[in-house]
Image (cartoon, rainbow, N blue to C red; front, side, top):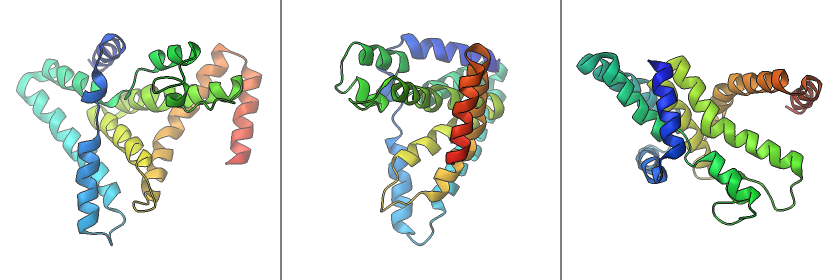
Length: 210
């Protein structure tokens, strides 16, 4: 049922329009910022927030869904969670816009590709976008179910919201932990389907620089 829910969510995500508003995480970010403003001395509140929303909230949601209607209701809830966690934008559409030369809101800038980037740099940006929009969510959904998808997306979102006022060093460490196995699997799959030696050299350079 996990694979079926994942397949349905990916198909809907690809063809459905207007999912960006549904995928907004601003409400959760606002809640966390209010909590941090009330207790500014506790720097670990963001980590607790992620675990409460992801593990407790996601686990409770999954348990209620399965208790009410078994695997079928769980699958429906899982599809809704995945539709929220994937993205927040359609990667293929953004790539098409970038290739078409649309460098505005929906073009290269969305993918983090600078106007002076070469093909190698553009490829890395697209690779990282695929990691954060697709593969990170998919991997942790398969491993942990609904809580895994929630934890990954909320962690990624809070990292993007980091600032001098909200230093999220612990959340960055959590994101590194969540993305490390996904990135390793992506590198292995790329090596098996493409040029193994080039992928190995890129991985070796990454290890030396980290």
